[in-house]
Amino acid sequence: MYKHVTILLLLFSSLHGFEYHLKPKKVAEDVYCFFGAPEEISKNNGGNMVNTCFVHTKEGFVVVDSGPTFEYASQAYEQMQKIAKLPVKYVINTHDHDDHWLGNSFYKSKNALLIGPRSYEQNVVVGMTSRMQRILGNELYGKTSIVKLDKIVDDTLTLKIGKRHFMIEKLVKKAHTQGDLIIYLNEEKVLFAGDLVFNDRVTSLRDGSLIGSIDALKKIDAFKAVVVIGGHGYKTDANSTKILKKYLIEMKKEVMEALDNDISIDQVTQRVIMPEFKNMKLYDVLHSRNIFEAYRELELYDEEEEK
Ligand SMILES: [Zn+2]
Image 1 (cartoon, rainbow, N blue to C red):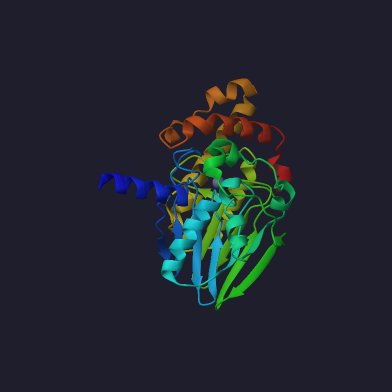
Image 2: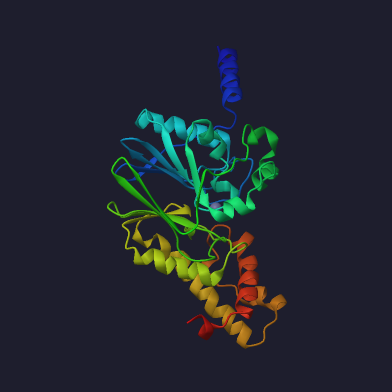
């Protein structure tokens, strides 16, 4: 008996590769998300440390971010099909970090149209070894491959599908990355913020801009959306931007003060600790790097010039 169960389990796991245990959570009428853990990418989580969402329309699904692997996207698709037997029409990629779009190759195999920012076109090279592949290894990476976008958004684009209007917009020049898109459902007041919004963990300023990120959060708040879904973290109410905004504004203030006091870049990461945020997930991994990036940016920043 046990032997049979073991064989079945082995069969199941070899058919499926990594088991993601994806459960869609309804965040608004016909809007669902899969919430990843507030962690770094690891073999244990299979890259499922990211949020992806889908909207159910009468004509088909619209997916926002396709997740970390082909297998993840395939399992997300299985969950969608339990809600309605409909095709995925569009996949909108919020930005070019690979945890958010490596599921594209799966959706391409289902004939979805892939949409994303110009920076994806510029930074994503077919055939390159992604960060995800390096960390997960080829076995977990499985059938994942890198595919080109079908449509690029430079500023704004509105998609009409099944009576819904998806407004896709680039809010500021550089924020989390060189090209972050938000997706807004105007009638439903639902906003998909990608990595412009983090909660339940510390963000990474590695490819971004502190000033741009603060600016983007102000613009997101101005939409007065009822539901705001970030790229990482579980909060989706109108307050989901709050913690990151507080973190970045405090960082700006303290790093500016350090610059005024001639603190060097070597000292600043030791000085600007921001203890209030110490208990946030990934603080130890990302905070001092963020301070370093903020210092380099603010060193050249002239507040008056910006106005
Ligand atoms: Zn991300």
